[in-house]
Amino acid sequence: MRFTTSLRTASTWWTPLLMLCLLLIGTIAIVAICPPGTQRVAIEALIKLLVVVGSYIFIGNSGVLSFGHVSFMGVGAYVAAWLVISPDTKELMLPGLPGFLMQAHWPPAAGALAAGVAASAFAFIVGLPLARLNGISASIGSFAVLAVVNAVLSNWTSVTGGQGSLYGLPSYAGLWTILPWALAALCVAWIYQQSRFGLRLRGAREDEVAAKSSGVDIWRERLIAFVISAFFVGVAGAFYGYFLGVIAARAFYLQMTFITITMLVVGGLNSLWGAVLGVLTITILGEVLRHAERGADLGLLSFGAHPGLQELGLAALMLIILIFRPRGLTGGREIPAITALWRPKKLSGSGSEQ
Image (tube, rainbow, N blue to C red; front, side):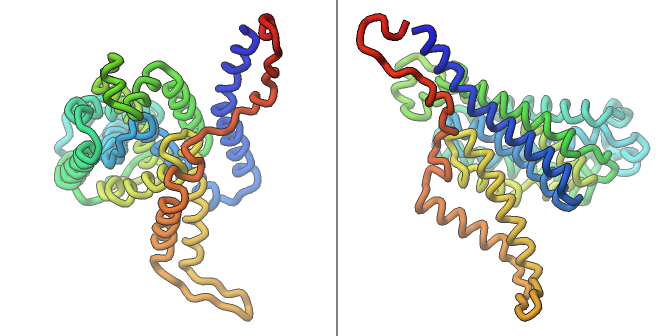
């Protein structure tokens, strides 16, 4: 019995280990053989992976579709900017900053960590009322948070730069600086969903009445997942600013919200492997459609440019997935456990599993 139990325990770790290995091998291959343009696409994909995996920690386990997680990305981006941009630049662009932020000049790595902590703190505050809502009410409430954060970032000119762009962020986002965060997000997401907290939250997702009758505090479990997920989305916001070298409030609103939710829905809302597969699928399809938008000349054949083809293709893919695979490409399942092949067959007799 102990031998069989240990095999089952080991098999549950094949999913995260396989994902981590694939991500690491893919990054090494991109660095070794791909041109700088492809590497930039991979960097952006890793940032979005942080957002999607962070969102999955709450959405996938609670079953509540949140439209407000990109607001944590915006909070993280601006907190990192306040901390890492040089004081001289902030005096010119952000005259309304408090003194301690005006004089701060942190290293980028510390700024990213602070961005995650600030996003988690903000998520705790807004999550106190949001975690009590269910279904469409919770989704609308999260969208209201997104709208409020965007309005503040767009109009608090002396502190955020308003609707203009905020310059001066260091160029710190690279494959090897983002990869550890992506690996950490995958590990934390897997550990959380295997923990008793994740099990209780998924139980409430499947049957809220039964979970309450079993003593599950649904409000507390949702709030814990909300805060954890916001941390990684906030870190992603900091790296997005480092990646672009400039941030603006409009970058953390509807377009980023819909593309990250599309990634999660296409891959599968209820599986961590679905979050990874969704990012990979949408990134590859988006690049193919982006090149198709420009047109192509193949000698005898030429194709004219078709603006808007990328948005149309992504919308069509999402519609097809919702019709034919409503649970996403993975069907809401994780990678099949490889060690299932090694499980010993049950023998007759009382001592067969000893």
